[in-house]
Image 1 (tube, rainbow, N blue to C red):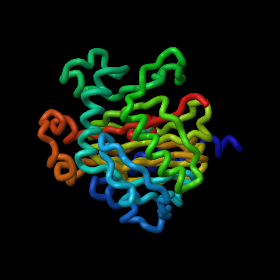
Image 2: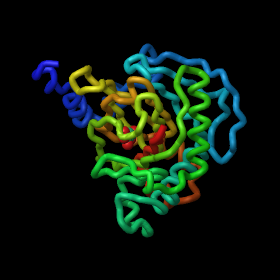
Image 3: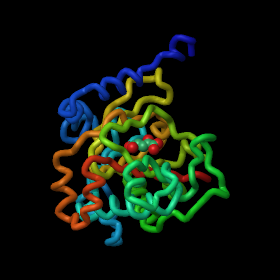
Length: 284
Ligand SMILES: O=C(O)CCC(=O)C(=O)O
């Protein structure tokens, strides 16, 4: 690669474009199955599995799975959760995952600190400074999260040629409406190219950008992620640059979540936040 194409950055201008765009234009420009149907290929789901009620999932017969034609190896599963289920996952992310593990805030025992939380790690904890996992820095992966991953992986891999993955590490990202996540790749896992990564979105919407394995390879594509949506990165997409330039207040969120929110504390947190839970296999 020449020095000039080495330094070519097709990612940042698109990131900045979505930073500046009105929320209404973000909702229309970012790809969804309804707004940009020709960019998604429907993959029939060929499996049926008995679902544990605690996972908060709709029956598998009602799910729709898509491969993304703009990014090889990227799959999109629009919200397979019930609204009670979405509420349960927000509740777990706030009341369990944010409190009982390594987080971005030192004292995570009080609600004031919790409002500032940016991330929590579960299973093998990611060392942000050295960008590694250590096999002696580990806490138990919550059972329900491991079970959820297993079901999602079973459904996707039986309907596509995607390999299975064991849930060994999770990063929970807590976003405010003005938060962003810069362009990066996830390559600290031992076998990143063959072990997929699953990512769950809850709460407000986001524009998720996914580009190529270098910033010079292609312009990133914008995907609209809404509460309950799942993406899976496998094959070449697993090593692609991705980012979140924008969190969007979702006018439908109250309708989706509030029906079941007897728990005011949860709504008072999530009404202006987004939670992302992403799961990886660290070792082979
Ligand atoms: O919030 C998201 O959807 C993406 C999170 C992500 O890319 C990461 O934690 O590495």
